[in-house]
Length: 224
Picture (cartoon, rainbow, N blue to C red):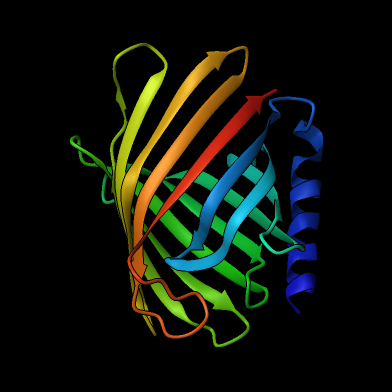
């Protein structure tokens, strides 16, 4: 079922963007090492090296994007995460926002699952507030709400950006929090490096559970 849904979405992406693929296509690729990878507050995998590709283009009054991440996981084996999203401007009660609808197929240490999410970001001035409602597709159809606060600061020198953040998830069966900071530096010519450290915790039972641990990640990216 989940493969059928993703095939239909990919078909819609290809047919919608076919005319504009050569006009306004953006592509990025990167390599990353992470001590822990999370989704909606649950840990998917530990100690992984990944290769990531992100492609987007303007279509149907918004922006359509596909991202693929392939992970070499600790202990052998490979995980693959795939996401398809569509974002477009909307006006809600006189406020101009961007709505983002995404569908993801994710691998994890306990098996694969799919997520459907609808969210937006609201600028507060002192920080950006993000909110997204999400649900598992198939499985136990768990529902959740993700809320986050973040703010970017360019410090010390041009191109060096610090982004402190906090993100919470409230689901049917658990609550989760992640708080930390990411640091990125623009090397020029489409190249960038970044690092992240964060405290992660949830009260989930069994698969995906965390017990108040710190995680770290470093990455190199290239924008074509």
